[in-house]
Figure 1 (cartoon, helix red, strand yellow):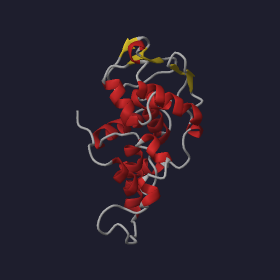
Figure 2 (cartoon, rainbow, N blue to C red; figure 1 turned 135 degrees about the vertical axis):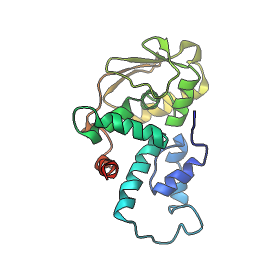
Figure 3 (cartoon, rainbow, N blue to C red; figure 1 turned 120 degrees about the horizontal axis):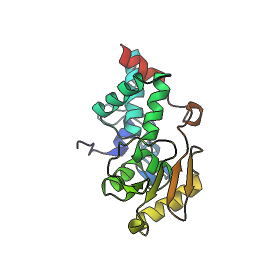
Figure 4 (cartoon, rainbow, N blue to C red; figure 1 turned 135 degrees about the horizontal axis):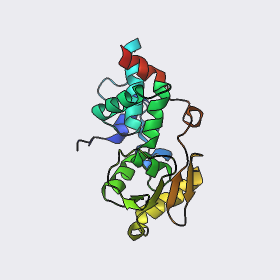
Length: 208
């Protein structure tokens, strides 16, 4: 399966915002945005006039990279959202939040979505007591997500849970930290998701 292998900090600098792709580093003064808050490259510090199309494109790239998807994966998910009932933009965000790798990250079992994807790929996650190794699996309300008992003593996972407890768990998830288990209670409402995401720009981009 194809995946991005370049610098994650470079992605944040390109989008000129923190996408929290590197876990705890993003909360420290080592964050690239804190040190070099300009676009990477030889001419990164020049002021650039961005077109209307550029505004739409950058929003799409920001969301796509936040959730760690490649272009084809993101476009396929958009098509799925478009065919669902309701508002396409909200449907898209709901589908992104329902991905297994994202749910593992939201529950605090990993410090980043890329680490969550690796945990899933290594078959360390159970969904309804069955091992799953598909990060893109869409979780349904009522599904139970648990770290495999054989892997619950892994230091990386235990450290991630300790750090996540200080940041809190989203309201649409229930977490039992002692059992490293959580339940996906419901699909999040748009009001539960970050306000700095403008999904309407993505809908407008794909409709052109």
